[in-house]
Amino acid sequence: MSVKEEASGRRSIQVEVEVPGTPEEVWQAIATGPGISAWFTPAEFEERDGKPVAVKLDFGPGMESRSVVTAWDPPRMFAKEADGWFPGSPPIATEWSIEARAGGVCVVRVVQSLFASTDDWDQQLIGSESGWPGAFRILSLGSDLVLSFSLPSFGECVDMVGMARRLRLQYPDAIYHLMARGNGRQDIVCDDVDRDRLQEHLGRAAIRCSWRVYAFAIMSNHLHVVLKTPQPNLARGMQAFLSGYANAWSRRHRFGGHVFQGRYRTELVEDETYLWTVTRYVHLNPVRGRLVEHPTAWAWSSYPGYARRGRRLEWVAYDELLASWAGAFGGPDPAGAYRRYVTAGLAEPPESPWKEAYHGWILGSEAFIDRVRSMVRGEPRRERRRESRLIQGPTLSRVSDVVCTFYGVDRAELRRRGSRHSARPALAYLARSRTAATNAELAAVLGVSRAESVPNLTRRFAAWLATDARAREQLRTLEEELDGSGPSEIT
Image 1: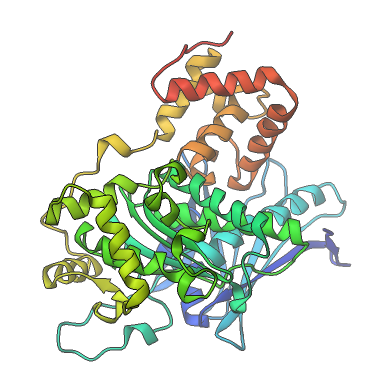
Image 2 (image 1 turned 60 degrees about the vertical axis):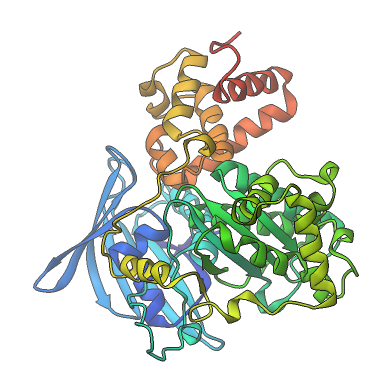
């Protein structure tokens, strides 16, 4: 990384990322309040005479940032200027530009600059440059580009699959079928080590986000998952899951490009009555792909756990899926019934359940589609299911309380700039592994000025864990306290 110097005294860094979508779609994500809020941090544009004059970013209490808009040319470029990072530092200018490329993608380019006669502020520019890739991974892998359109009424012929983006809805207890495909249909796994690692990353995301995973199948160039989100946290969880695996894969294979193809695909499922149909189709994927002759033989899916209890994974909701059949049809042996149901699909391969779905991505009754339509239009739902209290993971507030009690500090110490107290990296590590909190949310709790600084604390605690048995004992005690047992003070 290097800072570009100009004779005028301007010093700058430049970073860029390739994002799927048209310039108009990408503009919605990087140059509107809802768009920036969806992938980065809460944002709001101030307008005067119909034109943006300033943008406010909210990184947490006492950490708001306001920039003056200095150029505005949608959907190609906008620029803004803000006060310096620290008292006495020069103002920072940031220019965003969008360049359309072939294949339905755009290059988003960010240039940050300041004027200085010396290199005193170069390290701040370099630090900013190193932080942008993390934000860009969210934008390119897990963000919801902001699109405004309504679901058509019954009888209207609108090809929603052909639209540039499929609408993604998040709400409590939503059930999804997800598919993440390799970039350019390239393989996302090269060997069993990759398959094991991808499965591990999925399991961590499921535990951290309290997802109820009913089925998954890891193929060569794509991944299928069927899950329920008790909390509306699909985008956050998938971003952490996919980017975490992509980074590990890239390091192992020394690869510099994108691993996954833009956005993962989502289909909505009304309720548990459809689960057997959808999960059977997923479990038969390795057979359709000619990887094995029977789904039991494919180790990198959830089906072996349905076939043999001894092969179950702790984060797959096997019994919930089986109970959905027992509740609807009864019978003393739902596990045997499900195995027979899947095996029957070998002799008579079933059609994709999405052929019967509304516009190919909503599987459910007319009443369910009406509810989805009302959510798209922004109308409040009359009936919302209560989030299940039994399967929610700990909140960021709960983790903060446990850490503060354990280390004997208050929250003010966590927020104190420059503090080297062990509680800060411990909180960062626990929150990233046990909650769905974003780096921006953690930055507010930890008193750091930039969300990109949070991983530094996480890495610090991880390094301590690797070299110090005391750290591992403290982590075990903290996790026991979070789970409802164990002492709550440091020893």
